[in-house]
Image 1: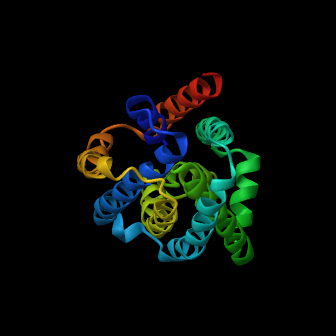
Image 2: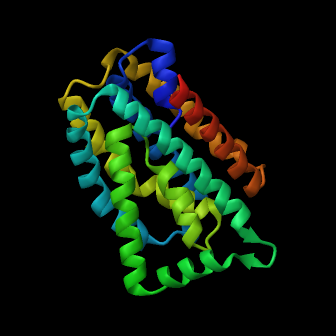
Length: 235
């Protein structure tokens, strides 16, 4: 989610072009990060959540991308800011709702619901719709939506959830990027340098973060998201 505000600040492109162009970074990050993390945690990855998410989210992403042409840049920027704030709050909740004795009562009820077949399907369809819409409308990879929401309802390790999110959102970013490209929202001269930089970051990121404990990673991520969203909303 940091690519859009960074592109706007550095290049001066319109918000819609920043959204479309950032999807190039998102797709590269998802592909490289997904392959890298899957190689390290393939035995703990369940294919069912990936199938549900990857089957629904691309349609939502493509549709949202097309709908974005009817929204003003100011409206999209406000949506993006609120999204960052809500995501950061969700991550903070994930950290502080889990006590040393286990999850809080509300989190336990959510996990119980998702453990049923109907609950699992409903929850992941909802996640796919939200993540796909966010990808197409806001130009993000979708992991900043999926990871905190999946972690609230899952007992899997953070790395497993992250890998599931990365792999399942690859088709969504492709669909969203295609839609934005058809509307002229991708600034092609920036694409080669963005891909090169993203490749380096996507490869080094998982390796650097592997030495940091899980709660610290969540708190740092949430703090940066909250700060970025607050600045964008006020400026």
